[in-house]
Every structure is written in C-alpha cells, then in structure tokens.
Amino acid sequence: MKLDHIECINLLFDYPRRHGFESSGGITTSRVTSLILVHTDRGEIGIGSVYSHPGMVQLVVQQLSALLRGHDVSDVEAVWEKMYGWTRWFGRKGAAMSALGGIDVALWDLRGKALRKPVWKLLGGLEASCPAYASALLWNSFDGLAAEAVGHLERGFRRMKMRLGKDEEYDTGAVQAVRRAIGPEHDLMCDASMRYHLTLARRIGRTLADNRAFWFEEPFQPEDLDSFAALRSTVRVPVAAGENEFGTQGFRELIERRAVDILQADASRCGGITEVRRVADMVAKAGLKLAPHSWSDAVAIVANAQVVASTPEALTVEVDQTGNPFVDDLLLEPLKIKEGRLQLSHAPGLGIELNPQTVARLRMADSLSVPDGRYSDMVFGQLETLPAGPYRERT
Image (cartoon, rainbow, N blue to C red):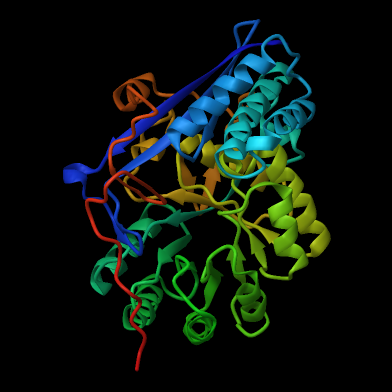
C-alpha cells in the first residue's frame, strides 16, 4: 500500500452573532479544525484530524505529502519515525507534531481497513465502546449550570466536566451547584483553565475534594511543573494535565516530575494514535492513568477512543458538548453515547465516514487567512472581545 498524496481540509465555524461560550479566555467567536485525508495508490482513503493553526498544519502536511509520495505506508510506526525525523528541525512540538499525528491517525485508519479490523481491536481491545464524558459547563449562572448538567445525564452521559477560573466565589459555588444537580453517583471533573497559583489551588482543591471531584485539571500553566508537583502531594483530588503537551518527551517529564495522576494525551495534538499508545505504555509502567483530551472534532474523539477502549489504564474519553458542528454534524453516523459509554464501530479502521455536506459547508477558502477572533484555545488577529479580567480571590 503506497501513499499517493495527502489532502488537508481546514474547517471553520462561526457561532451565531460570533458569540459562543464564555470562559477564562473570553467569549469564543469561532472554531477551527483540520481534516487529514491520506490517499493511496489503491484508491483507499484514511481519515485523521489535527487541532492547531490551520495554515501551519496545511504547510506541514504539504511538505510531508511530497516526502511520503510513493512510500509503503503499511508500517505505521516506521512512517511516524520518518515524519518525525523530517520535521525535527521545525517540529518536535506544536503544529508540526500535531500535523504528523493527524497523518498517523489516517494511517491507522488505513491499516485497519487493509486488515479488515477496527483499530480498537488491532490495539488489543475487547469491546466496541469506552467510557466517555460530556465536556461543557462553561461559565453560566448556577441555575443554568444545574439545568445543563441534568441535560447531559438525559443524553446518556454519566460523567461531565465543568470550567472554573472565573473567581473564587463563582468557582466554589458552581462546583456545589453542579454536584447538587447530578447527585453523588455521577462523576464531575473540574478544569481550572490554568488560572490558579499554588496557595489558591490548594484552597480550591479542598472544595473539590468535599464535592467528590473526579479530577482537578490544569490549575497552572503547563510549564509550571513545580506547582503541579507541589499540589499533587497536598490535595485530595487526582491532578490531571497534558492537553498542552506534545510527544513522549513532554509526558515523560510530567511522569518523572511526579506532577500529575492523570495524563491527557490527545491524538489530534500530541502526535497521533502511535504517540498516545506510547504515552499509555509509560502511564502503565508508572502506575498512573490516561484520559485523552479531545476538543476539536468527532474524528479526534473516535481516534482517542480507540486507545481508551484498548488500554486498561485509560479512564475515559472527552466529548465536546458545546454545540460544535465538528462534533455533532461531521460524521454520517453521529457519535452515540449509551449509559455513559461512547459506542464504537465494528467496521474496519476507525469505522467512520465524513458527512460531505458538512465538510463542504464549513470548508475554509484560504487556510493562511484565518478571520480574526477567539477560537476557544487559539486567538487570531485583532481581538473582538476582551479576555476575562484578573482572578478575584476571597479576602
């Protein structure tokens, strides 16, 4: 099976009136994601995706497409090493690592199709499903959060994640409101959006422990490993991080520094299914847990779910529930949650097909010219909305 060419399709969605959800980054106006289609000489197409700057992804994919043309791509891990070597001088982290990871996901899709097996089974999984959680609960009134949380339960979720980082009064009250709404039997994850210092994180951590939080995610900037390590030993809630890490080097550092309990490697960001599997091996040896981050699109969610479904140390996969068409409308057969589990296909490969109407409707005309706005985790051009103000602590 030889590679013919790689296609990068960048998608853009604007929220109505360019006013989506509000969080510590401000008001999100839009979303972007990049689909990767690997075409072979036999006419097969593998599907992957990337969550990064669309223009940067486009350029890296064009470079790798030219270098890989005519190569046998059946040995996915060997191709990963080639791509990593070719991008080392302008990669290793960031957009280049994410881009090669999108290609890697598409190659796993092709491998499964060639062997007539779903990827989760190729990876050693025994069941076509995995635990999943609703990722939403952005800043809102306490009553609004409670109503939304109940809605996630009604849609089949048994776990959900909320965003903190507004101010101390809000953060503590919001956690209490959601816990009351969902009861003690359902899991609640809390994402601090990198807004805390160590003393504050310990204080909020007590509230999270009292409300049986399932994990305490990213209280600090990803580079602040000292604070992560200091917090972990003094808080009664598992600490999670890793959505902002790339490659096994970054995750090895988190493990060796004893910084976290749960690592959140994302196939659409950190280097593909191949690299998430390597992180899973490291997690197993260290006696930790894996819970992949997935925020961009349904392809990324399904790719990460293949690893979760086949990894004993994996806890759950993230499913964006913020009204994102890249999640809700991108696939011909939408994602299905049943009794807290994401249902995977028995079809070969990733077992998904793209909805061509959604792709055509949201396709960007020029990936190097991204409209100004806030794209959840990314900002382009002049800011139309201000970020959240300074965090207000209790006096």
